Amino acid sequence: MSLLSVRCKLIPDASTADKLSRTVDQFANACNYALAVARRENAWNKFALQRLVYREIRERFGLSANLAVRAIARVGKRKGHKVGGFKATSVDYDQRILSLNIADEVVSLSTVEGRVKVPMRIAGYQRHLLRTAKSIQGGQLVRGRDSSWYIHLWCEYDDPPVLDPQGILGVDLGIVNIATDSDGETYSGSHLNSVRHRHRRLRKKLQKKGTKGAKRRLKKLSGKERRFANHTNHALSKRIVAKAQRTGRGIAIEALGGIRDRVRLRRPQRAALHSWAFFDLGQKLRYKAERAGVVLVQVDPRNTSRTCPACGHCEKLNRVSQAQFVCRSCGLVGHADHFAAVNIAVRGWAAVNQPYLGEAESAIRHNPVPGSPRL
Ligand SMILES: [Zn+2]
Image (cartoon, rainbow, N blue to C red; front, side, top):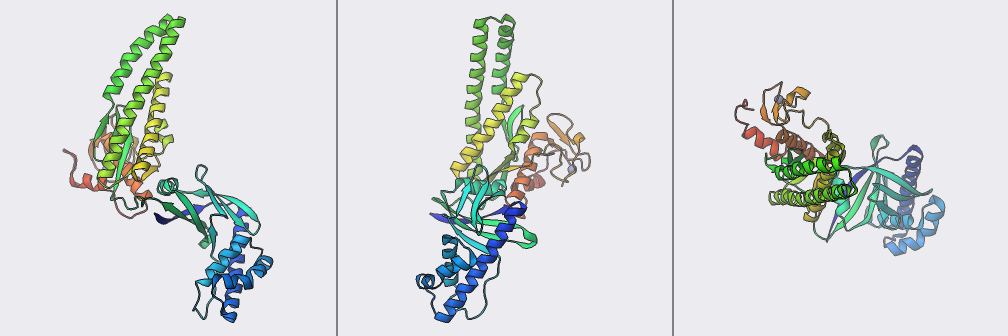
């Protein structure tokens, strides 16, 4: 079992922020009061001190039973400190006075004015750690500078989570190639596409017929396509996660909304299957990565396919065709999906919060695409 503190930014509204502020102030006041008593009576044992100050703390500072106990517990750790007190910057929470709604990304906290629900603003990395935690053991509410708010959540895991990926494998989900990673490997959808074409011809015939039996067959056909896409997605996500795990890397993909935006197809029924299939691939990747202890981050999808991974120049014309990328600024030439995946990897790496460029980017620096200028 391992414990890990995960820091999440809170975005309280004005009235909630006010309640949090008063709770932090009163918690510090209660700590300082109990500290004065502990020094005077030389009572540092948690239970002895609790007998002396518990009732007074609850009445004078308006703390709930559990918050009062947390304040007293904090004082016990100051044994031996002859001077100094507590600054009003944080409050300790145990799991009875803090709860987390992971789906909505909202944390519920006890305050001096009852329970409040506060939305969190988190990135893929924190989301991964929160979702894979076995339990949340409590946390610490922290008031930062410029009235920013944070919650440090104590997450418990059976196995230590992957904390230190050696880089990020960026994955671009496309149409012609179902996926391309930032190493330049493509996960082909040619088989999937040929099945789709075969079915499309049959579908046209059936649509022309328009009989009851034809409609039934049409429905069956779309079920067949779905099952096939499901099978393909299983295989692809398995391969990608295994590669990331083998090479000690996390995975970055575009936030799922972005995948839908990318899929622009004329035929509505094909578009529906496509967006379903891409959404499904994203879900399967996330699920398999979680189970394998691989960090998966979702990044902002804007301009990933138009930005040069070498010089950062962003322009629509950089992408000369579906397949080819030619940077209008530095002249770098390469495969468009590969470069998109590299951009995704770089953003994913930034999201993991380390000032280091992903392996993918350095790979491109060292092995420039033939015909392109040296970087
Ligand atoms: Zn460039």
